[in-house]
Amino acid sequence: MAAHQPGLAERLESVRGRIVDAAREAGRDAEAITTVVVTKFHPAVLVRELHELGVRDFGESRHQEAQPKIAQLADLDATWHFVGQLQSKKAKQVREYAQVLHSVDRQSLVDALAGAQARQVFIQLNLTDDPQRGGVAPAELDALADRVAATQGLELLGLMAVAPLGGRPREAFETVRELSERLRLRHPTASSLSMGMSGDFREAILEGATHLRVGTAITGNRPAHG
Ligand SMILES: *Cc1c(COP(=O)(O)O)cnc(C)c1O
Image (cartoon, rainbow, N blue to C red; front, side, top):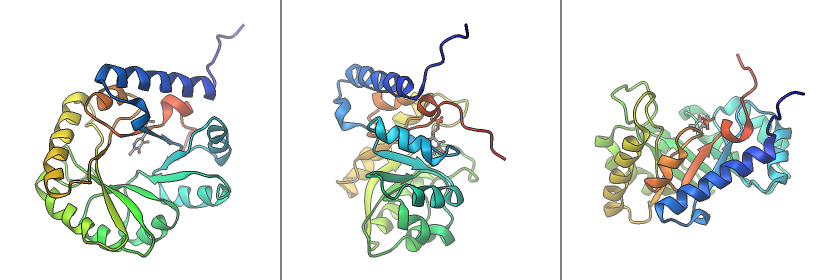
């Protein structure tokens, strides 16, 4: 007989258990941590299964995939998070279907996101020296945060980051936490931290993450894509 393959419900339960354990280790309340399940490359039916299992926060990273998928799921009571790199010329369309935007990293994009409907925004930090990576350099954070705060329809929630490949995630998340403490001197309500993925959410919780973005640990491997 084939070895037992854990299914979606078991993977979700397992991740939830590990989040509770990490929160306890950090002396934090796991209820105060939002897990965004990243469903990129997966079909709408998987989102429905997750919804039946109680998931309400979903993340997508590519506009051309997210837009039709979320349209098929309009009947669900769900919050959609856009976590991928965002083109300014697509900004207006993305803000139509995503209530939370995790990857805001430049002034032109902030301006393009202005609008009547309220949207929540994370500023993405670039923790590498490579400007090709998404995110704003820490030196430019204050100016960008001021711009978000002054823009119609946008509420600054806090900071988002991806731990650099090959680095130590705990150190990267510690840097984000320190920058967040500094940011809060200017913007006291911008206290949320979007950090932690399948491989490093424990470290992120230990450094204060309020929003985890977890894909494969819950969904299983992403279907092949071109
Ligand atoms: C895909 C993605 C995730 C989830 O990654 P996993 O390693 O599958 O958990 C989180 N954040 C961003 C920005 C992503 O693009």
